[in-house]
Amino acid sequence: MRALQTAATGMAAQELNVQTISNNIANLRTTGFKRQQVQFQDLLYENLRRAGASTSDQGTVIPAGLSIGSGVKTVSTPRDTSQGTLTSTSKPYDVAVRGEGYFKIRMPDGTNAYTRDGSFNLDAQGQMVNQNGYVLDPGITVPQNATSVLISAQGLVQASMPGQTALQSLGTINLTRFINKTGLNSIGDNLFQETTASGTPIDGTPSAEGFGNLLQNYLEDANVNAVTEISGLIAAQRAYEMNSKVITAADQMLSSTSQMFRG
Image (tube, one colour):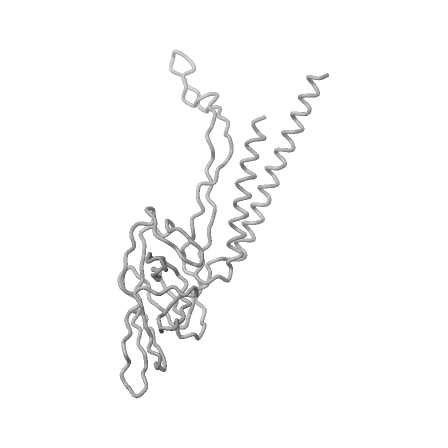
């Protein structure tokens, strides 16, 4: 019976839906995390009577066809790239992006990755690095004897030095944006890489047209809403249960049919 296979596709789709929701909930406190949502499409149809087919020589046509669907498929899990809530941390090298843009990170193999996680620290050479020790690009090196560091909304990094009244400029933190942010490839560790779908990276200065600005001593929280995720989880569970009931009903119908033929 075709209903068995159709319901099975529904169960598989909702299983992936639950898996996606569980990942969102697991990353509820992950800095800069962007939630994913599952998108579905229906599968091919078998047209037993095609709408618009002729029914007589006088030109009458079928107003509504007869077609049987074969289930559902999962087509994508795009990320919701909306702004997360900004939380104060009081840490001098924590930086949040307000608006568009990603921090560019130089990977150990020389390639670039991108992140909304601005929880930076200093390595042994005084370079600003992320939690895995990957260097911020372009690099910012803080002198060992600097007493404080200021990061402006435009990305300018300045240090207060002993015996100097003027601040010493250390460089500028740039941002990178993409035409299609949802096309970025997530590689874990809060990092993304460009793809053909995302388009080429566009580098710019914070507060410039099309780019957000920076806020020192703050981090961007995940844009996951716990209530929304739990509601989606309940809906996915109900859909899974209904598909399982379809399989049970189809199996009982097949058993009844089989008993009739044996009788």
